[in-house]
Image (cartoon, rainbow, N blue to C red; front, side, top):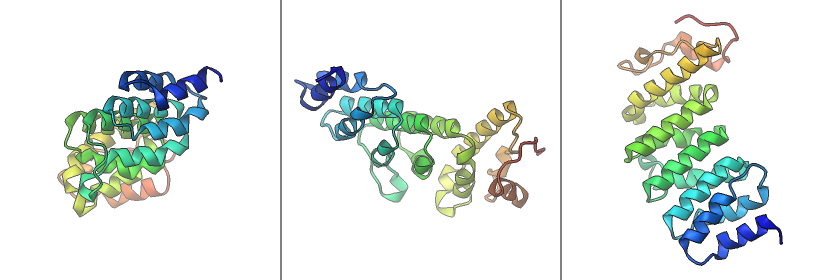
Length: 205
């Protein structure tokens, strides 16, 4: 049994929540793929701090096997998916999904913009900004969804941040707050631009 196996053993059978939590943290290293399944199991731990740090470590490892279990922890109140009851766990989950950059998590992250916890909403927004260009189409579709009117203001801010980062790389998507608020629909010209992939040249708004 090597050091990683010992940490996994403590995660699964440690005496007390603190020992299990420390084991979860210690397993959050790129390349520790053996720890993915045990960390996914730890997402169901009775102690919220263990669940939170297991989620954080899964984000650092970055294995795609963790995406679906993490999505289930995030929740979407509008869709009736409750997610984890503890706000800090959901915060860590959002951070992990942002670090992983998986497009599979985009719809769940957008739904979580309606989370009751302000810190979670801010971390979700940060995760979407970090994912960047792949999130643009999904965000625009959500802004145009009449069932997601309550998310439009948050979406506008995220699109603006993605656009600012794109400008730094000479990829201006031409996104503006007024594309989402107060108008409910994105201009057709911009929607076509996104759906046909973003060109390398700068696009003027």
